[in-house]
Length: 266
Image 1 (cartoon, helix red, strand yellow):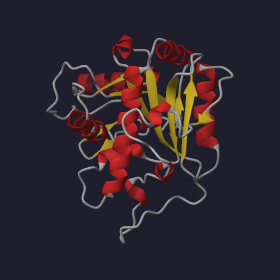
Image 2: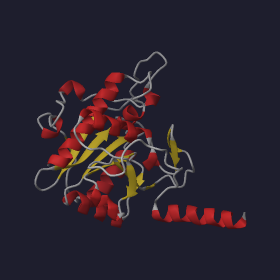
Image 3: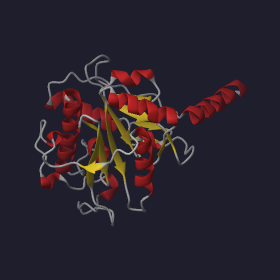
């Protein structure tokens, strides 16, 4: 028992020092281990400290905001990729930005980026990843309680690309039409499950406006998709839940798949 306790303390110290939170045993998946596309979730240390064993979704738990909606969101999205595209989709993964396996994946996902704390080595690695052809989709952060979450995200991205602006995505941008046509009516709020009332209505947090933004490299290629004041991850996670609006899950799939197809064709 003493040895087990010491091992647990060592594991906790390791996760706090290096930013990889403890995860429960990954649930069994029906996806192949080797494929041309794997949903890759970014692990990071967050600014809330060690919040314990609790983040994730219905089928998994992990320590840290990076794991919000894990693993349901990526498993459902991967099923969508299998069904709606001709890409060979495999089992989802999650690694830190400093893990060398990062470069095996052309498309990565980071949620709750208003809470992340990226070290200089992590921002340097993210810059290298993006300049070598990678793409990151960020999601589920808000200004309903003030500008703090946006400021945390923007500060980190300014260290990735100093002086590079974060701009609204134009409706004429090819990412909006690479597979699905995203129109002005689609620039709408995609709710989290917490934004649904018992009457079935969607309640957008007061003072928030959904923003679809991006960052580009020197060749004008989009490398960062910024989904602000909206929750695509929940729309994927609850795709199999009858009370979640089907139209919102459909739109979330279209955004995600457009980002994915863009990333592997640009």
